[in-house]
Image (cartoon, rainbow over all chains, first blue to last red):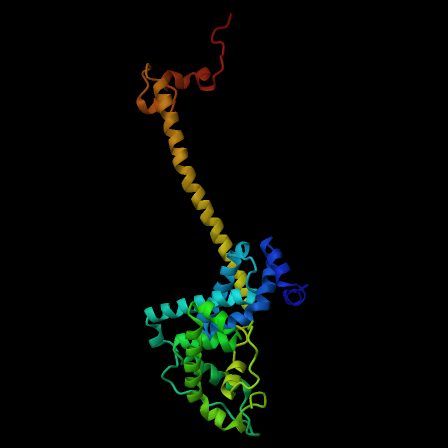
Length: 201
Length: 113
């Protein structure tokens, strides 16, 4: 059975038990199953690249070290997202300290890329996703963290507040502010609704 | 993950952002995680060996000093130097070097009847 098959058929609890016993294939299946949630958090916070890949790997390594202590009080996905968010925020701090943001490809001061419009007048969905990800990346990190957790991860306000260690009211106000910023950035794409893919219209 | 009802009337911006969530890392991510896990284990093994070595070295040094002191104490009435005494080296003279019994510790009869 490949890791992929195992990821499809076996429950998290069973895979965790096997990983605890030293079964690397079971751990690989957990990685396969939950890498999407970790990717949405880490790439949402850091942008796509080596930094994000490194933090994603570190998230799973930390989880592996904590396997014996994982009691399953929260879902594995929530647990991993929590680790991923903390590591991403640490990575952003490191980035700030090393002034990397001034020499990296942070697009804060760059215009959003123009998505290509097909012959039928529709914007390619993938291109539009890139534009939206750029818009999210231009938010301040506190607002970005809320958007990543509430909208990318579908976390509740309470879960978001717990993960970020802030009151629920703060989550709501940051989300509201972030949505206003995103609206301002993405308005041209939404206003010309005809250019949006069917799924978003 | 959420315990809140999804808003069916989410704003177009909200729908746009939800749909744009990055779905995965670059291909081979799982392999990279496992490779890093294995590398970490090898490093941990080397560190454990290092720790054991640092634990054993002082003990071995202490045992060697104790043995040297014991040898030296036992040879204090002889003419052996302190160094030879500490290492429990036998006295070597020109005649003993040529003496087969003293070399091999066996008695060879030197006179014939």
